[in-house]
Image (cartoon, rainbow, N blue to C red; front, side):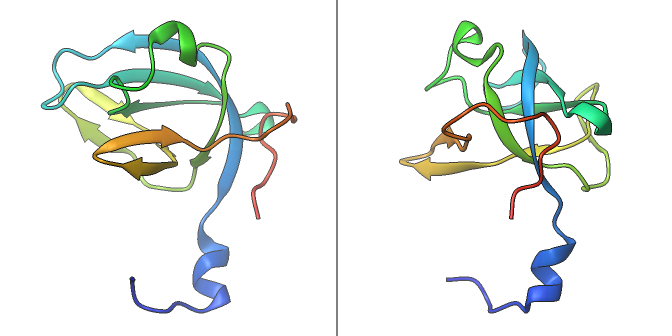
Length: 111
């Protein structure tokens, strides 16, 4: 278990719902990954990469709603600039994306 944090620490993390609108292969990545374009409604469009190729096809991901951290600083990954971090559960090195059970408005906060 990681160290205990207080509520103010957690409150800084901005988790939002977004819809994946584009999925591309990312052959330049060190580990197999996709490049994702995600619509966060009023927050706009953000790009990221995700090492989720073992559990998801590009077709599985297109139009899927996901949870992501949207207030990380941009990070360069190969020649690609990542602007958010999708959230998932790790099972035997594979990442399963967290997502709402029902469709919600893009940009909805996750508490």
